[in-house]
Length: 64
Image (cartoon, rainbow, N blue to C red; front, side, top):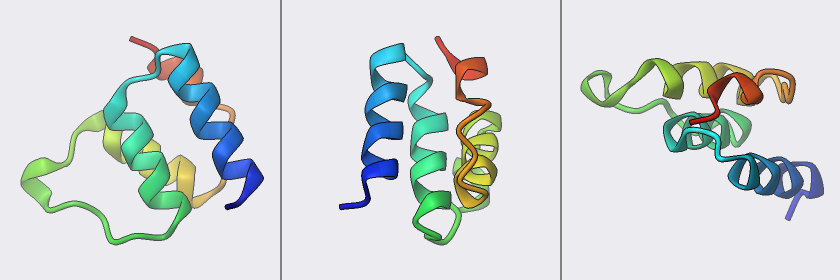
């Protein structure tokens, strides 16, 4: 497993980041296809874009 991925997800979970953002970030990081349009949320989309860019700077904005 990629240490950057594992550490980022663990940190997000420990900080209480929105689950939708985390799922989006994971999908983007792993370059999975995006969800179907009806299941996409603002948090998921933001996470997906950050994950694709391997960006760790914005997830604190999505704490619950």
